[in-house]
Length: 212
Image (cartoon, rainbow, N blue to C red):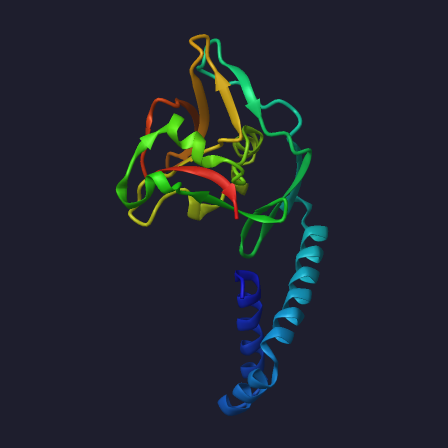
């Protein structure tokens, strides 16, 4: 059961208890619901709630056009767009379970070369990216303009280290023919943007901005 359905299931149980039913009656009501049917029912309710919420709060839903070229790195003299993932217009939505991009949850992802404390050069990581659903710098630019959409849980790791979100869907090339990727990080008060050369070593706080 995903986060949205779990939230509704908990609310359903809370409603039953507040209705004056005994623990045994609540247990019988929940047990009487086939898990598959309950999931489907909750899914329909979740969709209705989200749709109503978005109608009443249009600020929770934004459409961006990824076919438009993203910005060039501010401090990258001579950098040009080498490759950019153009996927047309994409819906970005705030939901109870997180931020969703094109209907899929926005996440920061470790690549296999970074797990267990390993590090590797950005150029080596390009080979692993392949067809993974990484996001382009169009989304980075959106977050810079609308930092209120950036998920709180993606700003730091469990140890309080600032996470760097790399938007691998857009590559920049310098006059030296080297490639660069732009990234975001939270400095405690605001989102900051910069870029890294792919000859840099990427550790476990330098993550790929992607969708599930």
